Image 1 (cartoon, rainbow, N blue to C red):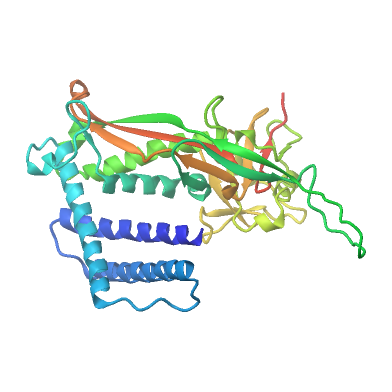
Image 2: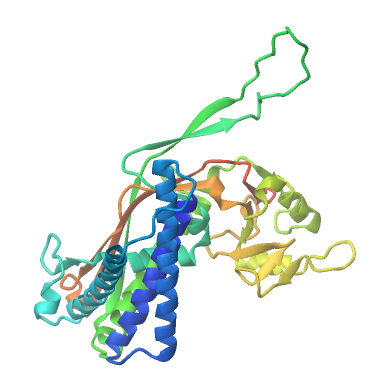
Length: 392
């Protein structure tokens, strides 16, 4: 798991690196001193992560406890060259894609891979990665969930000790121990196909000063984030269930109000061992209502905190506000709290994003369509809890 986190960190650093290089090239200027310093720092961090991953790989294969042998100059130079080639490819893909969107018929636009159908082209992989990264950045629920890229169905074993648990008890010599084991169940993740279409005005595209590629990345990331986050929080009958079938819940006494005692009880629904990475998830209106709650000595429960990931904390834990969360109303799930690794999200295939230049020509627009196949279910109900409002 730690190796995966290091790889994700390295990919994030490379995306930052590509962004700085691409910006300078598009503006046809040299790197500033600050940018050069930033790139140097990123290169050092990437090299450090690579060295760490190599050390882990060496220890895993050889069972060695020491450090792997130092890399030769040839190996180091090869890695540097690969990094440069990645940077050049990302910058070239961005230029090619920009030329295609603007309708410039030249070698640069022709370098893109055509998809089936006239006027349709696949977005380069480097740009698709920018979109996916941004989806993770703006959706902490998805980012913090356990993510798996697996084709076909995936079955996850889940240990349930709610009825029968492993026990430890005093015993005497020569006496048999009583066997008592919990039950294993499985959670099956399949795959549901979803698509999104964004239209972009040709008037914007024709503005030479407008960053078309950046707009496409931001717009697609926002559309995909909104859809996936809604499914993770609310689910859809017969499709992705997400947190909608969570069993670890409590019900508020009122239909449209929450008390301070109920907030405290909800937090305590999660065992201390799972509290470290816990967050609150609620709608903007619910957060506003909670701002007025006080404890027994008159202190507000919700606090503004610039050190918190989302700017506010409740009982010491960060609050994430989502427009996809229902407001406080009869029967609604108003708050989720817990460690989002208790939720698993499976992607069956890489996100497929295409540009349609001709189909929407009569609307003076181009279309950007994205396809993804995914599923999401709760894998450990001990980590996440929910507060539901009283029914009507």
